[in-house]
Length: 289
Image (cartoon, rainbow, N blue to C red; front, side, top):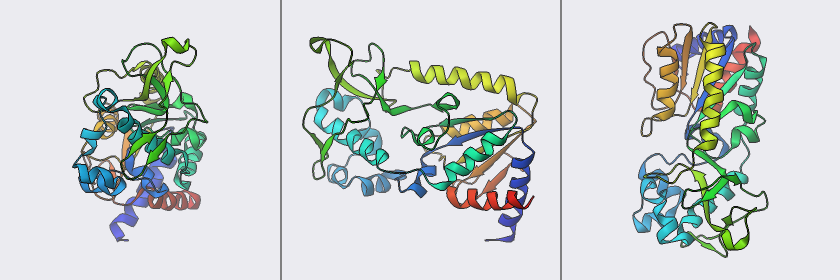
């Protein structure tokens, strides 16, 4: 590790120590150290899903609601595989480090993530302190976009044919409290590409809590935005953190990313490391202080 990175680590640790509140903004890159794919470019996506390489389908062409209308077995094969993967994967130690920091702050923490895996809640973060801006695979809705959403049952599992990536067996229907004759095909409550049927009620409630947190705690207290694994292809997460520090002089952006390392200006800090490595090194620095 270069002397410059060592210097930035010490500076970042000081910022984290002095902050009164923490906002954690996270993209798919935070899950790589847990063993999850980040779908970086078509080749990264096809490495995770070889059958789709044969079909020449990219992530935007696969993660779209049209498959639930045209080929629901294929649609649920893809999302069922992801559900099984997320459930069988444990969040890495970095999540615990972030939780320790957040819970130690006078004004607490909030999380803004594009990830749909529910791993922050799985790692013990409060449901009330998380925004999942693209929804969550742990909730379902009707394909037609009408009605309410409901939790994905804990015992629900899709059997997937690994050669075709198609679901084998009955597909989920709901809502569960409706008469069976009134139930329709369900889909994950995830914002897909070209999606006009996503029910955003849960995400809007999360955003309201986040906005309240920002108003109460970030306008006057020194705070840090810890961004981890947020790329530029879909920059929703990066923009959110940059907006917070751009509109407030008392905030510092700490960008942890091994490739997309640019920062708005030199007030902020870029650590060109993977998430877990950076968090463990920062935690060691904090323990010295």
